[in-house]
Image (tube, rainbow, N blue to C red; front, side, top):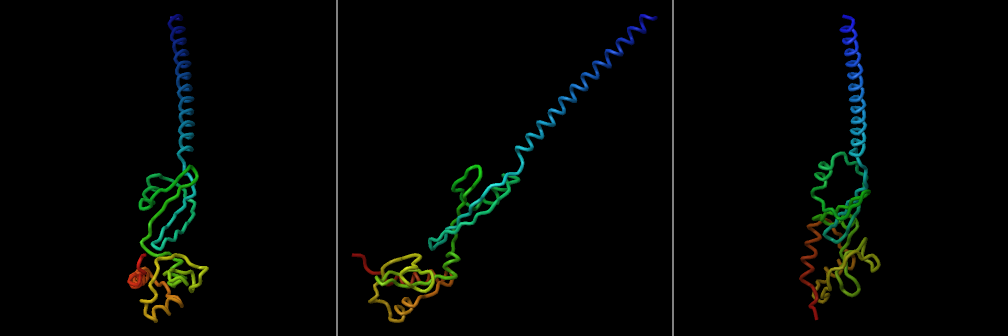
Length: 180
């Protein structure tokens, strides 16, 4: 009887020791797994980068906008910029470009069609003067221009919007000088 009680006691103590070791060992394993999960989470957290948005307008002007973007989800980020072309990227910066089917804001606010001393149809920043040419188009045959058109070009024709821009180019395109 004594032997039986001693054996049962030893078996019980052994079971308790084994159970404690296994539970504590698995708890240590669980703690290390939690740590690994936390480390993975830190690596997968949001990332802040500089995004440069380049807009290229029909008149050749390019504007740049620089913003800081926090990326929480790459899928959402790419979805947001899906109508932009990725031009360049590194770990800190992404450059996107978009062709805009319009004239630039600069042209709408302060652009004027004019004519240079040599008879080249140009767009100026502000009223026509030789130093502020933004864009040159083609040589005009000034002898074919009506005097009113010539006078308006000397003074400057404001660029109002895309439709007006295209209309002026089309009308004055009829007066292109012949290539020699």
